[in-house]
Figure 1: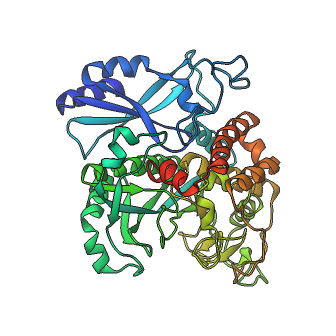
Figure 2: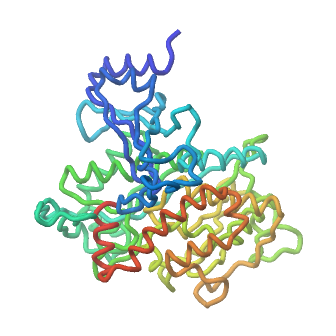
Length: 478
């Protein structure tokens, strides 16, 4: 009987594939991995590939945040130490042919310990565990993605590639705009930026991603990609693949794409990643947020007027843990400047009905199968697995405790509500204080994640030139 690995090897041979990249998503949402020849693929599928464990211990600069060569340097991290090996195992069913290069395939990998145990600190594993918890409660999760990002034309790579100027991290390329901005959804601006947007389209569709639309956003060189809703794990996988693939495809054509929230230029607009979410009742297959009729006596500004009890509890859970989950939704030091008044970005932990100034936007009406909650706190650089896992754990807490949501806001910038964290340090402190959310992720993971983000925070706080820090740390590579 032919298995998935045998079928894949047959396909690789039939299609003339020469190289296969086996990619794994790191703590920061970046694809890393190894490339094997077609001849070596069978052994890689059977045995896995050695992967240095320090890849899981790095901050955003690629510095190892743990002292792996000192006794006790990785205390509390079972299976880590002295830059030992993990085993990267590929999922044969994830195979895709890369549309921007020749004779090259791609496989999704996940790390395992050498004794065969899954690495529980792997962020994809974190989401898988959260979704198992959700399934035990009788639900699945659908997510739709709205991803804002910036595309620039590369004008010069001399500084970036000059060995005399290399540093850790290095400089980005010199760039110019692909459209001047400040004319939302302008068709002329779309036409001006059509060449790179066509690359985005063909790359996404060539990888089988459910791209729905491409749009001109308000800021200079800012664009948006919108995806149809899918199962949460599939949506997270798609986000990882999309973000990393379009950067590579655009780079080959002379463009620099960045998912950094606030690129290091004057007069830019911040980019957000708006995560639309709903629950599916496993037993019936129906949207568990849909309410047939408004609750008796409810007013339009009450959650029970629009959402089912399950939907209201989920909404209340997201509000309850809004500050604690912010570091998973906005994990970089750069992203917190986005939380400002009247910027189509949230400032406080509030919800609203179809209100794009609130942190949570409830979309839909009674009987509407598309009823959902949009979280507007995320930045496009976020690790998708952690972003979505934070929603699951927060929402489930609301369901389990049957939390009630406060009335909707119609003035999201009035100063009402708890203010969102103003910095990465504030966000880490909020997570530490949110004991229920931290417990849901597990003490080991929270300690590990906090250690890595603290390394980034300390370097940012110590940087004399914070603009240069962000230019090198985020714009160059995010």
